[in-house]
Image (tube, one colour):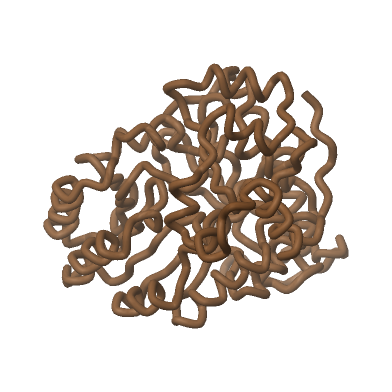
Length: 386
């Protein structure tokens, strides 16, 4: 399958989103549409539901019918409005609608490419780094990304909101005093109710050696209705609380999504953007520059650009590492440094994140040969003896 070059487009205006709502959900009042619980309850989850709003290709329809027991189809009505109803090659649509390519497994691909299960001392805890743990609080997402690293488990009911599992995981964190950083993930932690999320944060923040809490989420992009003033005020009790927001393309940064990020920033939460480099979606210098510049406009610092993990069935999303390096080099010097993320490869089997970057420095005896963003060469005196 060939994917056309993705283009930078202006995000859909509120008028376009309203037109989608009026066409497919005319009986729903604005209050319900803007209620995140309504959006979750009415996720599009099957072939009949998706065919109502998209003209499916043969490949897409076959994949939806075949995917039973695997990474499910799940799409909020809000996010469905961002998908091109006619073009199956649209980047955003490919990341959410199953493809038969998901069933092709290439060398090096694994169900658990990062060896998380080998670093999981008990359900819900992944302890790969010395002073940090990943706390999987649920396997549920508002939408499911087809390149998901945890496609082996998300959406399958393995990690349902379970206070007993949470308590055991929190006890593990309490007993391991080397842990200073706890990242809530899943699934998506922000699909939990205020009460359940508050309960988890209360217990974690009471542990003396836990210095910072983080939440990894795509909710501001796929379910921005979840971010409210009341919700943000509740979370202010847990500073320092950081958000890692998963965003892959400027088309996701609608007025609603940007407002959700701004609301979090207004309440004092540092926001970092995390993107995955995806073939035919964002593997283009102009797309990536537009994405990162617009993230900064809503006070999200582009933090990591991830090489796509070698999860089984993901080869159609993979770029070469050199493409990632070229994109990073295209950003450096051509936009503000704040818009340049770190490019990371997660080492297979649990080796952890490894930063990779273009080579701008070469040693020549006591001199360094430097190359700037224009490709110009310079020499810098730096004796090896110090």
